[in-house]
Amino acid sequence: MIRNIKSIISIYLCLLLVAGCKKFADVDVPSNQLSSGNVFSTNSTVKAAISGMFVTLSTSDSYELQLGLSSYTGMSADELDFNSTSDTYDPFVNNAIGSDNTSIQNLWTDLYEVNYQANSIIEGITNSTATLTDSIKQDALAESKFVRAFCHFYLVNLWGSVPLVTTTNVTVTKNIARSSTDTVYQQIIADLESAAANLNKNYTFSGGKRIMPNKYAAMALLARVHLYLGNWQKAANYSDSVINHSNGLYSLLSSANIGTIMTANNSEAIWQLSSSGTTGYTMEGQYYLIISPTPSYLVSDHLLAAFETGDLRLSNWIGSVTVDNVTYYYPYKYKLKATNTTSLAENATYLRLAEQYLIRAEANMELGNTADAITDINIIRNRAGLNNTTATSKEEVRLAIEKERQTELFTEYGQRWMDLRRTGRIDAVLGAEKSNWTADAALFPIPLNELYNDIHLTQNPGY
Image 1 (tube, rainbow, N blue to C red):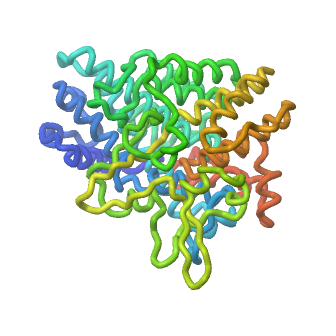
Image 2: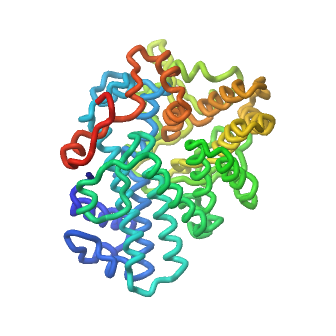
């Protein structure tokens, strides 16, 4: 189901070399497994393993996780168009993805490879007989469970029922069947609850940088998970804890600073991935600044039309360039390109406070607390330079939240695509926008190679 175990170990060790750990790279790893007795024998090797896992998430080696989670879902939904003909990208825009699509294969593989690293750390620390500092063990286990939950969250939302992989045992993973979405979500919740109980409340363990998940990152992801599952009270409670009970750690950026929403370690960021040391296309692709002379990824007319007059998000988060008297609009939340020598002042932002306000608004609306929901909607609208919402009824508030999520969270790692799926609105919205839309397109196809390699895997309907 995932790549050959030796290949994964090689990738794993190389990534740790990038992270700067000579000791870990010098370990003689058996051909069929990571040796916990050697790899997790000291505090430094545990830290190196964690560093390697996050390096995988944040560098060009996981290109699909940087670009794909935003661009593929953005094109599949109603956020992005691709400004040329492409056998790889046209299928996303047209929702006609083949199971042999290489981008789909790579995205699947990247998520499972990071998940493998998380599992190897959990198993290695659990089975290690070495004397390790309790706090380091606790942090490493919690961080790994957070990452494992993160990977499974995207897998289950992009493909539906997927293999739930919580082991590195190749005899188990090479022929593993799909688990129900309920089972996958149960594991996600268990991992995040454990992470929330054991992670630090602040960012002192990462030098004040918000590039490692803390307790509130786990709670923020739990709020999202429970929202997706319709567990409204839990979603409201978790989001409220992040907003109101995080000891002033988080605050929304002001209207004047809304253009800097992706800056590193800003007050709104809950969890980011560092862009320091990245090279090549990772940050350029993530930031959509591929303009030569026109942008590769264009903001769709549908998304442009969603912004109201005077919305600061339109003027600050969408860029434009005019070529031959034609104006092209592109996502511009991120402002900087990467070079081989530049450490950027921006970080890839996966969790931020504005989403928590919208989660709490939706949960309260569903719980019948419409006035509270409207208050949170207005906080986000007012920050964007807009007047209070005119929505009053529950249905009006529901649509107002959908619209605010669309204009606030666009091109942020699949939020719009997953919103349309989870709310059951995908057929109505995309059916009106795309003439060739079919309901089966709401899930990506299981990659063809995975079906060949795993006799127990089955394909999603329509592929």
